[in-house]
Image (cartoon, rainbow over all chains, first blue to last red; front, side, top):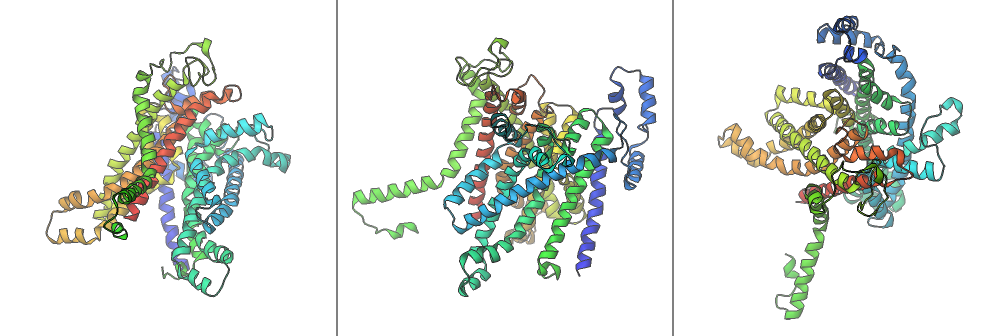
Length: 318
Length: 294
């Protein structure tokens, strides 16, 4: 039973990933802007442009080029940068860990703040914590991350000098400086996440408290309110939390593009920006494919987590 | 009804007070709609007519002699940017672009995505599968990254930015329209109309579409907010509205390096963007709870 569900999900996963890579390829190759021209400059000799196009394989039909790219990509070869000649795979392997660390940190900050706020707000609706949480969430959802990033730099880096304004220090040079350089960018990303998570979790817990029969049972047998809230309701609300984490993952990745640019972090977000500026199509393609594949994978993992957490899904009764 | 809770015959003064109280309560209950709606109307009027009414200088009419004036300077109430342009004027003209981009990409999503979703959901079958799988692939891309790639390769101008953001709004609207249509298809009145022998086209246009539109409209408000966010982000990265034209995002970006000595350059457009997005979000949420509770 379980295996067949996993199998079915996986069968849906493969065409979506293939489709995503194809659309990326199509998008980058059909849109105006010639790579050979971008490398040599607009007033280069037409003969040398034609020669370079041939060298890069740009004169072949689109489908053939996609097929070649896919063949290589499946063996782990994403091509080399048109500008620096570096292997795209190598560049990505240097950049991905930075972004990953940033995302994990942002995610942790958001969850650590959102869960207690949501639980306390659900315990006392319209209480002080609920109202504060609602106001903060409204701000979190309406302040663009680049504004928030700039405000945080102004406050904590330029005014109080708690954190460095920009730049990244690798984990190799010590955990302290590493975390300090990532704290402000992670905080910037986590604010909107906090807003979304805390509101959603609160709403879901309130709904469970009001409607679910197991809450009545627990109250009837004399379980204390805080215990009902944490041991019973919160555990059930984890489902909605997992869903929204999965759904929000795309936004999270989008945020890294902006935040890495502001804080000058060498992650894949800033790599994407610079490769798009330089028309370095192979790098752009590598980054977009990685991001799309990761997003689709996260959605798959979200679906599979339901299986782990909810026996009803596992046995197909829901 | 609520009326029956009060005795039908009341002394005139008390009756007046009761009705006053009820009117006030009614009025206060709809505050969550009127406050954000009022702010939005004011904002739109200010952006499109404000520059003429207040006689503001043009968004690029500044002189370097007035560069980086603080808030509340004489002649420039919100100060000036790095090259002396009036910040209020830039915020209002930038607001025009922000509103146009927001509405434009929302409308494309509404019409194109809405139609695709309704048709796919109503017809079902292979057509539905093909449409939805295709759109799912676009949703697999983070919206800002998709807009970012499309806007760069098309060339940055207002129309292309609208087009780029539509790559996100079309699939999003299509999903919602499809989900709503699937529910409607099973409703009694739709089945009854079909059993009466109405043409499929008439069922769709007369019965399904009018009932899909309300939920799409409230979602539309949230979409305008998201589109404004993406526009500002694109302009902030230098990939949105090209340079001399003012945009909230590009003004914020231009103030980035003067953050500590001239914070107004970042602050003024940020406050405008925040006000617009916060009002759209609250109005959208208020309307959604109304519709859901009905």
